[in-house]
View (cartoon, rainbow, N blue to C red):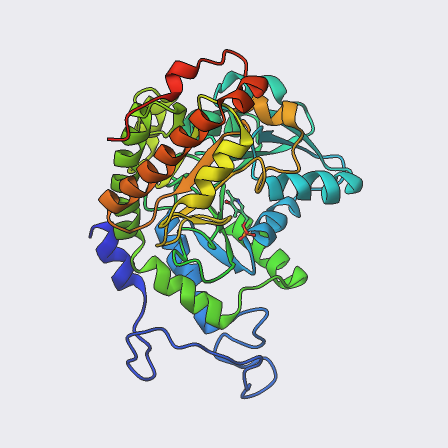
Length: 408
Ligand SMILES: *Cc1c(COP(=O)(O)O)cnc(C)c1O
């Protein structure tokens, strides 16, 4: 069976009624025949039939033994960190998701868990950062928002050799594109809010483990801490996953065309997209991903926040919002939105300039999307021309002739 078939046919038909859509078991408790004698469900924090369908589906999809559904991507990350003890160290990818950074530094640091951030696009940096206290390596690939790619299989070898757990946040790629457990990871987490749900209508998280022992530890944490996903949201994620491969394929095809369009545009400086041969780790992306995904970032030759703000506020189909992975295209300005709390010098080190714009390419027709971006960009051509003195004060290497471009 190919993936799309396997997904649709590993979601069970309801045994009781034959319902082809998974029933939503909106109940808190389950009646028992005698104390402790029940049908596998006693209390809905511990286990819920709708949530279980989602969890089993995610274990299958990621090639793991167990999966657990949480009330957000962050509570899934939190559950993994709770495997550690005071004194343990984490090595994490340097341009980690901001919410994970906040959780590590503002919550777990005070419990004695420390984090070393490294540029994991160069595998040797991981090996160099390992100490006797390192218990967990935390990767994202691709990262947000500059789409950095790390070699998951190589890093997994290093982790195994040192008996360190490797967890991959697979939110950006989704299992339709990349399966970290098959590449050697012990744990995978997701913000199911993004591609898994796929319709910008829920908040959810998933943890998948590659063995039963680790799975039962996560299960214990899920039940003991209680950040479970509700039956209705579990149902929405199941429904999203039914079309995941077909969506990711289309997101990726459109994103590739848009990345090519942007690469050729006169006002654009850098385009970050793993599918472009110009991308630093394009070869690794090609090895470990089936698709290059629907997220693209780019910045402008005139690196000014106001110009970028003008673009993100004037697109018609790309809606200005945080988040990603939905059927409708989104656009955002990381320096003012998702990455606002990060100091400018640190931001610039990872390529998040004032003019960096992130796109989440949706399922609209790609010609409409390119047209939309073209109009937004041509608007700033006029804008920059009219305000050329203003740019002059704010930009090094200012060259007015580069601003006058044709609108065709
Ligand atoms: C959104 C996101 C998260 C957090 O997920 P929530 O569902 O918002 O809690 C974690 N990692 C990545 C890469 C994300 O994009």
